[in-house]
Structure formats: structure tokens, C-alpha cells
Length: 385
Ligand SMILES: Cc1cc2nc3c(=O)[nH]c(=O)nc-3n(C[C@H](O)[C@H](O)[C@H](O)COP(=O)(O)OP(=O)(O)OC[C@H]3O[C@@H](n4cnc5c(N)ncnc54)[C@H](O)[C@@H]3O)c2cc1C
Image (cartoon, rainbow, N blue to C red; front, side, top):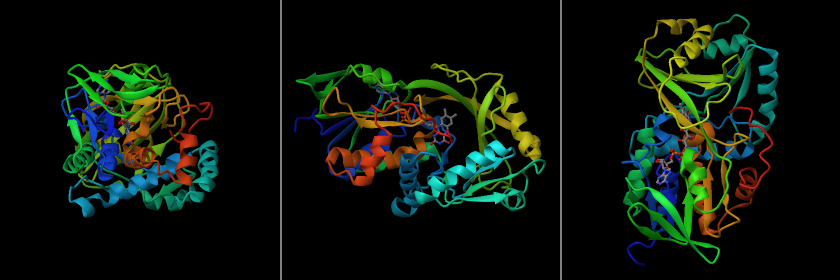
């Protein structure tokens, strides 16, 4: 095989492209990953707050994330790197009958896909999170096998192992075009050269639609900006990630947890969404999220915030990812539109991509792929975005 020739080229060394490269390298394929940034995980990956859950409303995401959780949870034992995995669980709070109903209705499908999750009424829920505001609390769900890890340490661990297994990563190199012949993929062009491969995977995150357009493919992925913050470190007092899905003026859900090293890390979903690529922090984020968090856990008012940042969700119209072969161009695989869950989906999607490339998908995979199809109607709505 010529030097610039590969079995697979991946555009994007982020939350999805990196574990996908690892899985493909593990299968013995010659893989090239190209990223415009100077190192791995510098796009949306490093802006994620590190939440890892299989608690979703969509069966495809439940399945993929259950597998991802196994990868994250066992990584240190299997490969030695500390990715700061902490099995602390996820909890969804209910203070209104609306949220109680939504969360309870989801339990049936969640349990049917093997998720370890249960409903706890207010008294039992307060034993799990003693600092929650008890006033008006109805209860909530708790899924103890979910957790958190460091997005940068994890992506570095995947990257190092992929390289060890022979994958090539080229940084500071921007993909500018696709090479195709006779209705099928032949390679990519970059600002520095040209590379050949019969398979190209678009894992370009928030700009996935621009990269797809280079191949003449239209995908409904739009960047939508979200802010996050981290506090000073204090002795551990919080167990699971806490998610409050009550919409109020200016925001939809918000979520936060205490990291293994003591910092509280948090995030809010603005409503309406803020579309675009703007990464400058705003002055409206902290007052908005802090008042909601302190309302939920009054004790948090004593914490000092150390840093805020802003990043992009690669959003799709229905809140689910887009994974599938393009019908328009043979050999072109889309793995974009991860919304707010690309970090937790990464390893599961990486392994799915490996089976797709090897032509070894299972019946379960094919079912998963119908949920994630680029050609679905995008009508439904993920309840736990
Ligand atoms: C504030 C915030 C909190 C979040 N919290 C969580 C969380 O707790 N858990 C979770 O699972 N997810 C979370 N997310 C979402 C998560 O960050 C994204 O879903 C995920 O990083 C997307 O992964 P990706 O691989 O698709 O994109 P990225 O990680 O952005 O990777 C795409 C890569 O493609 C490269 N690229 C793009 N175009 C080109 C080109 N033309 N040429 C070369 N390279 C290119 C980019 O440089 C980038 O490195 C959060 C996001 C934000 C903003």
C-alpha cells in the first residue's frame, strides 16, 4: 500500500473519531485521522463536562452508552491509564407531576434495554442526595452504574492506544475536499496534501455538515453553544450527577456533579438555543445557572466558581446522533450530530463503526442503525437531551 494510502480515513480526532480510530486499528486496519487542531480532543471534546450515562429515552443511545460505560469503567484495569472514571450514578429530580410522569414513563423502556435504574420517592431520594432542597420534592430516578470521567484524559488514552496499534494521526491539517470517482469515495484533500482510502468517515463534530457538503451530502447538524463552569475543590459531599429537566424562562435543563477531585462542574441548556460558532463566554450564564442550582441545593451558595467556558453541541433536529453510510456516495460514513452526548457515545459508536466497516454488524446493530439513520424523518424528540 502506498504511503499516502489507507484502509480508512477519519475526519476529526474528537470524542467520536478517536475511539473509532482505536477500534479500527484494533481490527488491524490501516487508519489515518486528520484534525485541523494541534492535538487530539481540542474541538467539542475538551469542553464536555465529563458526564457518562446510559440513562436515555432512545434505545439506540441506551445500548451504545451501556457499552461505552463498560469501556470507560474498565479502562484503567485493562490499559493502565487513569481517566478519572468515577462510578457515582446519575439522578433526575422531580418537583412537579410533569417530570415525575416523564421519568416514570421512561423507566419501562430503560429497564427493557438492561439499564439499572429505579424510582425513589422523596424520603428515599434524600438518602441518596441529602443536600437536595426537600421543599416540594416528589422523588427521582437513580441509575447507580452511570458516572463521569475526564474527556481529555480519556481521549488521550484512546489516542495513545490507537497510535500504538498503528493508527496515523496528523494534526494542524484541515480537510478541504473529498476525492471521489465513479460514485464512490477515493480519498480526501487537505491544505497540505492528498490521501487515498476507499472509506472516509466524517466525525467532524459541530462542523460535520460542512465536511459532508464537501461530498455533496446534506446532513442536518447545526452547532449550538452551551456554557459550563467549574468551582474550587471542596471535600466530597455530592454523590451522583444531578439533572433537573424543568424548563424555566431562559433555560431548559441543567446538570452538575462533583468531580472525584472535589470540584463541582455544571452546565445549562439555554432556551431558546443559541445557534452558531461563538465561543466567547457570556455574563448571563452564571447568574442563570447559579440561581437554579442554589435553589435545588442551597448549600452550593458557599462555593466559589473558578472558571467558565463555552463549547458547541453538534445538534440534530431530534436530538439523536446520525450514524450511517451515505446513500449518495459509496464508502462515505457519517458519524456526526452527537448533540450533548458525544463523549459518552464515543466508544460505543467507535465499536459499531468497526463492525460496519468490516461488514460484521449484528441484528442489534442494524436495529440501532435504523434509529440513527441519516435518512430518518427527524420527527421525534429525545426526552433526556
Ligand atoms: C458545555 C458542554 C458540556 C458537555 N457535556 C457533555 C457530557 O457531560 N457528556 C457528553 O457525553 N457530552 C457532553 N458534551 C457534548 C460533547 O462535547 C460533544 O457531543 C462531543 O464532543 C462531540 O464529539 P465529536 O467527535 O462529534 O466532535 P469533536 O469532539 O468536536 O471532534 C470533531 C473534530 O473534528 C475536527 N474537524 C472538524 N472539521 C474538520 C476539517 N475540515 N478538517 C480537519 N478536522 C476537522 C475538529 O477540529 C474536532 O477536533 C458537552 C458539550 C458542551 C459544549
